[in-house]
Image (cartoon, rainbow, N blue to C red):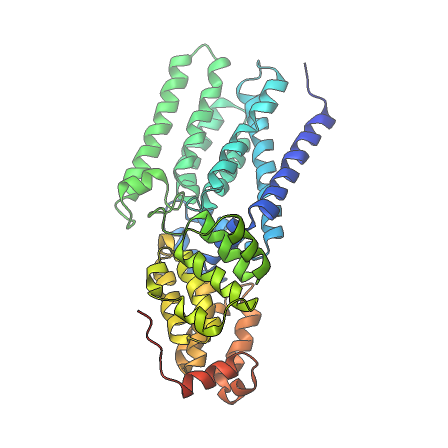
Length: 408
């Protein structure tokens, strides 16, 4: 029994709307943290740096999309569109591979890759490189010629080139060549051709290990398909508290804490900060609660949270130290736009204007931090204007008139 066209469209739209609702309202912290963990620069050097490793183009496209996650609604929309594209391409390719199977079964099966990716992306250690690589590979497969001999010739080109562009997920092209088994009685020949394509891919994998500074294991798994060091970014709890404190949603922080007490020490400090803003504790009590603050730096996100906390309290040096820790622990050798913004602020407040200018110059080459960087650049080049700034002026005065605090 065939599925009606209206039903097909309704199902894919329902899936896209479900994905949007999930990421925009149930899991927005994941989107914002992904943006926090990268610095996408709009220059040729950044593109070249990505293209010199296998899968670099997929990583570049993935990071380009992630920069829009600064607005979680836009990020959710991007993910939902990507999921719908993967589902539709999967269905079209399945119809080519197994035309004898009922269209209804194939259409429902085409949702399985989306479900798998959906679950994978709930893990912060899985970057956007993987879903982008899969979608680009599916698009290449769909563009392959219909004639077998011509398709084989094109595949011999696509496998090595595609491997360098999207990574080892290009193995799907090799598997896709097996679709000719049901059309030809020369099954041995089809298997031999598929083995040839597989051997070509294996040669590309081994050869690339001689030119890139990654282990063979990482190359086979896919560079940037997964973070090289997992469980460094932070737990879901830490990301939730970080999201709320960035929104300054102090009532929601306290409500969340009353429902279930925070486990991570950084989250406990954020709860105390919320209590301070709601005038439940005094500044001195907040300061006393920060005994041994470095024990809270258990992950990248927790270090960013502690930097925000110290900066709001006026302890600029500690805010700088925490953000340096976060920058150095960012996964897969990335930089962080959020970290650079904080480091530019602390350099400005402490009078390190040349250092601040270095950070600001990098941020000027981004899409969404550019305007902020231009405002900061004006302050760096005209330090006399800092005194009139509502936030940096008082912080600079406090910094210049008080001794550094030592938290142990």
